[in-house]
Length: 297
Image (cartoon, rainbow, N blue to C red; front, top):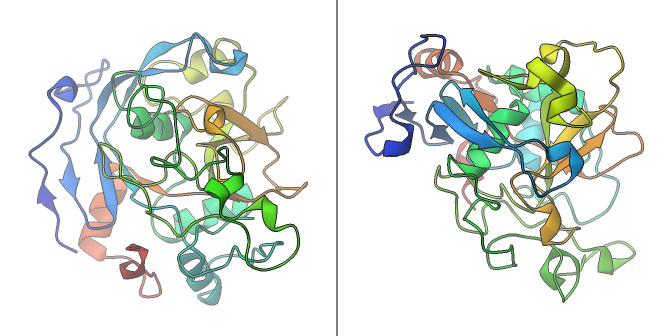
């Protein structure tokens, strides 16, 4: 998998160092991941829900994000290789090979990303990948989400009016195959709508309540992302879904849920890679069982 230097890094993100003096890694291009250049961005919102406040500048190292949500066939390949646990989708019509894999526990998402030499993105990494550096409300700007830009619930119903074709309650709709809408500025698909996406952080009532663990450089959330975090029992999903309207598909909306995914919800995920992880993948390649070519819709 050859990587080439990316030359079109936005000028707004041309900083060479993080505030602590760490050099910002240059972007390189891959066929399956988009590069989010290191530097500052506006995280949070002053006009959204309480847990989105306050808006503040956060700095991140360069990070790579999967262009697409992890698909059914990709996840099942991990299960077949005995690197992932089985995760059954409870409703019918959500298991086409190129639909996003939903119904996974947070732990399942972590295991899948690790099996590829990647990681489940931090909440800050996910948000910057979705909104860039200008504080936009949606991945494409300030225009309210419609079914032209994302797979959401609109006036026709859930999933843009497309009903389930199998099982009961067809009005509940379904996910679409990945990548049916235009990509973001970083080449990422479905960052708004289609399926909610797990991120690594423990949830917090607000960024203010979270304190220093949610501030500064490369924040990892409460307890700095440790496996156990006293007083915290829920993780975060981001991005909205086919089931919910535009107000959930913003770059700042934070929904919390227990990592065991019990009670069950149709949550999906995508993976991220640090510059070091990306370099290891570049030199050593991905495991032989990994499906990459089929992510193209």
